[in-house]
Length: 261
Image (tube, rainbow, N blue to C red):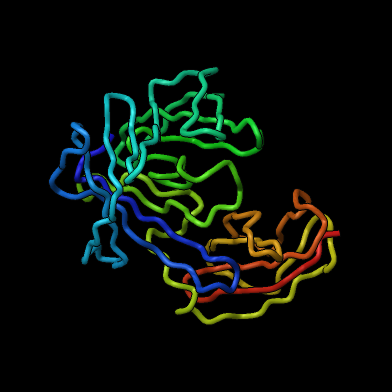
């Protein structure tokens, strides 16, 4: 899975109103090193859209052993992925996180190559799913997603994956590979109606192309993300309460609040 030619673009979303949103590259050092007798690659990151000025992560390494991919930090290691898993197999990256393989398929990448995908369900949250793509990582959360946890409250999203500078995968939820910081975009308050509502809300904005949509609980946790390409949003899957809404396209950041009754 891992070579020095592989790179990912992620976006990070702060809590609503907590500093904006932006993108960064993840890749590996050109030269491997030895750690505890094993050959590993150090992780590095870049905040530049052109992929310049890489910064080496301190005490973070990746190692591949056949179908298994491991992550190392200063104190321990985790099994990130195991692409030999089959339906019914169990996977636990560390204590307290248990998943079951519920589906195995194949996906065609942009270069026409077919890669194995593994879908896993969390024991504690059956509605939450990981979907791994061999050589890419999780289809929505990227390389290091199993280090997170079984929760919809993610602030990291995979946008694009490259190999040898060729674009092989674009997250269907992303409208481009690089997301500009929210602080650089004009913030526009939008009306939401009906408000309160329990099923469908409508926004008083016009978006000329698909945009990214996010719904946050009032404690700042993200409860829903989606591609916004029309004015109506279904909120019937949310619990009762007050929420903050953020729609981001390449020109604006639209914000509003609503009550789900």
